[in-house]
Image 1 (cartoon, rainbow, N blue to C red):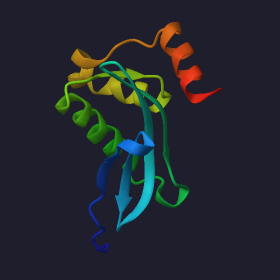
Image 2 (image 1 turned 90 degrees about the vertical axis):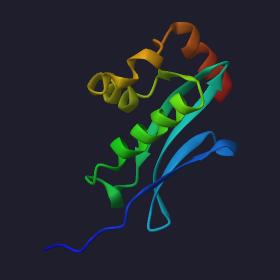
Image 3 (image 1 turned 45 degrees about the vertical axis):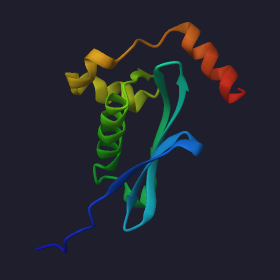
Image 4 (image 1 turned 180 degrees about the vertical axis):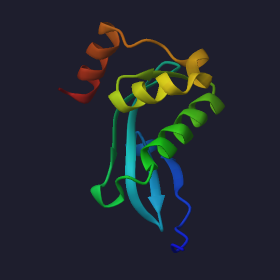
Length: 113
């Protein structure tokens, strides 16, 4: 039988505009966002290679989207991983807005790219 692994913890880090997933206190991954009015625009998700294959991205995004709902905001899934996650988890459909050219232009300007 394999050794019991630590339960991952997800936290919102507002000053860095992201949610982080921690394993044994170490950051294993993140999903980054910017807020536009009442919408949280997710644009990037990553998990460190050392933690790949453990389902951490799914846990991270699930917790992040649950938090978005709890604070009364809506989701805009620019990040391909978040968009893919939402296709399999229709429980967030009621708070998901489409990615539009306007949102993409705003995001590029906000991120300075």
